[in-house]
Structure formats: structure tokens, C-alpha cells
Length: 604
Image 1: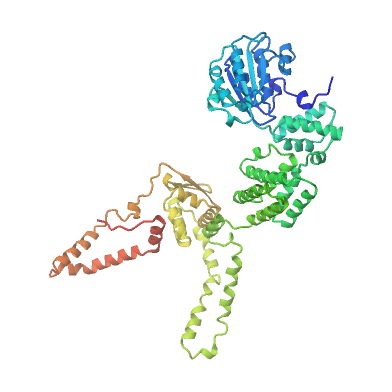
Image 2: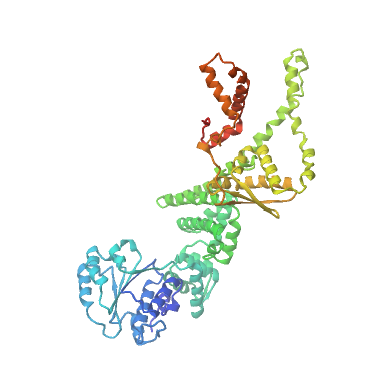
């Protein structure tokens, strides 16, 4: 018997042999078991994912001796004929070479004839998207209402080229790319049957190069056996197909994450000198950073297509940068990939992209600035820290030469005496105040705690207290403080949930209670949103009783100036006016007006 390649020798023969397409297999098996068979099926998927094999297996299940049956015998005569493509009742048509109107009309005329041996007459059209528009239109009526003994099965890699009127008449099944781990496991199984020693790393390298296609992976294994003989290593796979190992890609990513520009450029140089395709190398690097993003979101999904060694490295690298930094790197490398496709000097663009990726990881983002400002520190802005620290020394040395000769000038001593106390508040009077904490550690009721807590926030971080004013304390259980917000105040809750704000609030809570406390911020639909009159911060509420007499005499004073009653009440009115002005000019009221874009309205 002549030699048979692995892709044909190990083609799936039953539903159990189909790998990586469980959703398709399960639906077809259930349809057969429940006798719910449609008249037309469309299989969509990349090359080598099992479209033709699944169609043949489905045809076997429909046309076997006691069919339709799920558990058919693949060695049955009819099943063998179908598998080999020589069954008279199962017609396989190549859509690329039989795409004209005449061929479809001939098919339409033959549909009315009953099958000769099988229960059904099955027409399988591969690459159906190659049919012309006229051919599709000629097939429409027959496809919608075929004779009961006819089944249509279509397969395509480009469903977007098929007329919507054709797709709407079919049951569509999308076959997925087969996971790398599934391909590697099947290749190891084939190697074991063929008495070939295939390393596990080599199997993963083949699966990665096959890009989800089992047929491509089997063809590559066939080629490697011819090249290497009975023992195949990962290096053999890399040498024969020009792939880059997963470890090399992961190592370049580590250089970038560690800001090791020299090491990253050396890695690019080594791969280029080894004759690797830099375009594919860059694509693997982008895929690796994408895997780091998936690792941060769903660790189980990230490990599906990775070898055990690379999976461990991915777990470590995912903790070396945050999501925003990784997204910047991926965006930058994607731009480089687009430029490299048309560039003659691919290595130059690759190296520039690597340098830009290192720099992007060291940039300070807007979120870092906001967090640093919220926390009241410069931890997130390392570049500006030296400037802040170098400013005080000149101020401290300035009072030293007290300008003895300038003592006759009276303003000079006054200025010097006023500057001396400036550093004094920083000379640690706070420690004695903080040591009075034992008095605060006495048990507090929840209401007392909340009142003092809001007061401390008002004193130390006035901007944050506006977010707390929309909240209410819902209870303290052990060391967890539950704070509720109306559903309309999600912005206030999100603002307080920033890491810098949470750290600040927890430190205040610990200062009041004497123990480590945690906050739980929740949205509670039962809470009423704070009432703002024209966002006037409650200024349109009913005025106090004293306000009416104060305003009424003012009007009458203009109308009847000779009456003396308004004069007696003028001090009260002027005091009220002064109080109103003080209220309106309060810094918190002004900041609230800016924040909410509000205006103050006089009560009528």
C-alpha cells in the first residue's frame, strides 16, 4: 500500500474523533437523536479545523444502515465509501471549480431523483463562497424547499462572501481554532502510534505554528519526521520552520518590563542573526503581551495555549505592570507591526518599537497624577520629588546671616523674626498630639464615630468631604465600616474607592478606633439622593423666621424714609446681610459652586 500522510491517515472517522469542536458535535448528535434534522447546514471556520471531516461524519450518521444513528460503525461499507468520497448518494462538489449557473442548474435538476442506496441524498459543497451571485440565485428556491430525501451541507472559510439569503436558509455552525494544548496532545498521540520520540516542547511549538489548524499541524509533523527521523526536539521545529521559541519571546518581554533596553535590543539582534522572520517574531511578542492582559483578567483562559514553562513566566510578568501600561505597549507594538509590513529595514523598526515600549512603561499616566494629587503626596510623581526636597535648605540658611549691618533698617529685623517661626510648626509638635490617641480609643457609638470621622476628613482633606456628605453610615461590624450611597451618587462612591483615598480614610478610622479598619462602599437604592435646589445646596429651603422681618422693613424704608421703625431694625438687617455675605464667601461654598457648576439663588 502506498504511503499515506498523517493528515489523511488520522482524519476523524466518528464524532468522538473530532477535537476542539464540542459545541458543533453536541448539537449534531442531539439533532440526530431527536430526529430534528434540518434540510441545509453551513459549516464556517478557518482552514484545517475539521469542516469537511465533520460533514462526512454527519453524512455517515444519516446514511448508515440503521440510520440516522449516532453510534454508527465506521467500518461499514457505506461509511467507508462516504469517507473515501466515492458514494453515489453523497456528492462532494468543489465550489471553486463548479461555481457557474449551469452547474447549479444541473444540480437543481438532479435533486428530484431519489437516492440509490442511502436514506438521504446529500450534496456537500466546499468553499461555497466561490459561487457566483447568479449561481446562488439559481439555488435559492431549491435550497429553501428541497425534496424530503435531500440534505445540503456547505462549508466556507469566508462567510461574509455568501449572500444573506443563502445563510438565512441554513443552520450555521462556527468551528473554532483548535487550542494549542489540544493540538500538542494529539500530536504526541500520533507520534506514539508512529514510534516517533516527539518532545513535549516540540509539540507545543508545532501547535503554535499551526495557528489552530489540526491539518497544518499534522502536515508539519509529517515533514519533521522526514527531516529528523525518530527523534524530534523543539530546536528542530524552530530550525525547520523558522519559528521563535516561546521562551525567547517571553525573555524579550521580560527585558521590556524590566526596562532593560540593552538586553531587549540584544535579543532582537540574536533572532535576526539566526534567520528568524522578524515580522512573525513581533507578532508573537504582541500575542505575549495580550496573554499578560488576559492573565490579569482570567488566569485560567491565559494558560490554555501555553506550555507549562511559559505559563509560569506569564504569571510572574503579569504582576510587573498594570493594565494601562500593558495596553500602551500593545498599542505601540501594533503600530510598529503595521509599519514593518511595508518597510525594507524591518530590524530598524523593530528596535525602535522596543525602545518606545520601554519608555512607555516609564511614563507617568494621568491616573497616576490624579492618584498622587488625591493622596496629597508626590509618590506617583518621582521626577518632581527632588525639586520639592531641594527647595527648603536655602530657606533655612537664609536666617543665619541675620544681616547685623542692616540692623538700623527697621523692616529687616521684623522680616527675619517673622521667617523664623515658619519652620517651627514643622519641628514636630504633632507627635505629642498624636500620643493623646488613647483618649480617642475609648469605645465610640457609631454616630459619634461618624461625626468625628467626617470632621477629621473636613479638617485634613476638605475636597474629599464633599463626597462623604452624600453618604451615610450603615453600620460597623468587627473591623468593617459599611458606608452607603444613593444610586445617583456613584461618582462620589467611585472617587472614595481610589486606592489613595481608601488608604487615607482607613488611617483616619484607625486613628479614631485604635485598630485597623476596612471600608465597604455600596450603592443602596433605598437611600434618597441629597436634595439640591437648582443645585443651590439647599439655599432655596424655607427661610428662617427672622429673615422675613429683616427683608420687609428694607423695602418699606425706601418707600417711607420718615418712619423710624426701620431704623431701629437696621442693625439686625445689616448683621443678617453680613452673615449672608460670610456664608456666600465661604471657601467650601465657593468650591461646591465650581464643582457642581451651580449658582446661588436668593430665597423668595
